[in-house]
Length: 248
Image 1: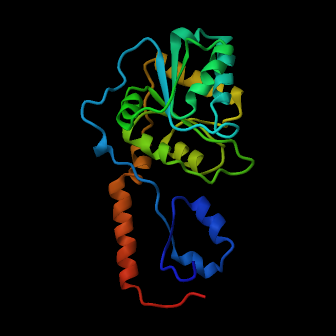
Image 2: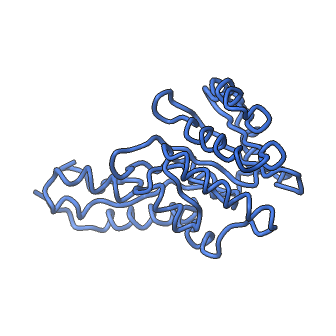
Image 3: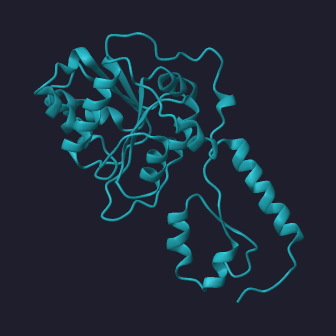
């Protein structure tokens, strides 16, 4: 760290945590280089969300038993079942490694006609699944304090320009970005809060008003791979022309 000319982090929360144990002067050589998405890699002819009878929510990613799980979401959907006929209003597709392990729980909660769990699929198929969604899902692990992690999956979703429901700690890197995007956030271990967020999305969809916020594109732009590449180029140019000096 002492010898580095530049130290990169994907978000300021991680930078603050790591650099807090080093001399303050070293903070001057840290840069925030966020994950980037490239909408140009999306295959032409990818399906898009079209008219359908049910709102479709899609999650593509990995689950970790006991940490990052869809259990809070499934409990929230069970709550909603008490006031809405979800089987006629909502389809939730959970796709990725270990997802199928939660199909039995969905069945036990009476959500067999609402929730579909699939194991990992090829990349292009996961792109098609996301492109055909009405709402994309981010599911993080609960946290006792601010969440330091900004999953690349959340940034990947920006390429689709769709509403995103973030089940993530209310304080942290993911929540900060989601709020800038104008997307709803609920703690992953708060079924009541998740149920409220899903209900609001269903109401917007049924009213024909579901879409991204006016500030979505502005917030997403800084994560465009062309913007992150320009940032990297500026930093490298700065390092090349910076006078050599020791920071102690």
